[in-house]
Image (cartoon, rainbow, N blue to C red; front, side):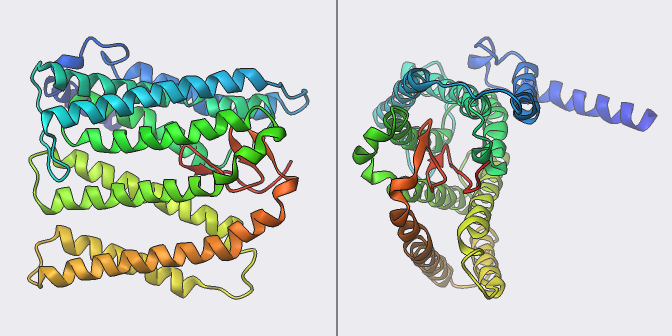
Length: 355
């Protein structure tokens, strides 16, 4: 007990010290005074997801057609505002896409960046309602581990991001993600209106491709900032990179479990391990100053990415898209998340199981 108490005070001491290093511009903004509200909201989210399904087990599902439509419309507006503010302010400030340190000044355009990043953080709280709607509508098959993990981590992670690095390189990931969400919530808003609008959603297959593209852009961006030794907090660079790897790993695992493994009769584990080992080795060769020709390191990186992308494209064409085309008339939509399909919800792919 004494050891646990000592550890608690050590953590508290470190946290209090870290607060002295935080961005003073955001200290009085909503939810930014303390980490506690963010953690409480996240904990409540997990509780609702866990116990809400049991609560709804013997109850009739709710119907939220127009609620979902306006919910998605609101998120379209919010994400477009975030995207446009980050894009326009970063262009005006001449932000670099390879290395951009944080400017903690009160410059009006720097404040636009900081405020847009706060809205991005807050949007992750709002998007937790995605799962709440699933629970109330008894769409439990859509509540995958990947879905819950993403929602339960993005909100607290971005509190840290805004609290300490509300500017600089932080703008890029938020800008790309908010743009993707404008496209996704547009799709979700239309699909929430009912099956009669499915004919306007022929482009649904490209949502997954957009999401994958976002992942890889984020990974490459994170790697190159470490390689070029950018004057930007290293802990934030590594945190973003590690988190990106966890999302990609879970995303790939879902597709293997849901689409590839059921089709395959023979194990393909050696091939999967080869991809993981090769990419990991190439990534660390860029970060560690190895006495090996840099042109060769970059050549291996780009070649590895081309092989991985072609591999993914093959599986999409062979196992996912062709299967979806055969079942297109049997599918329905849930809050823009394709029920029993391969739609992506905030970076999450729904499962194919049914209740």
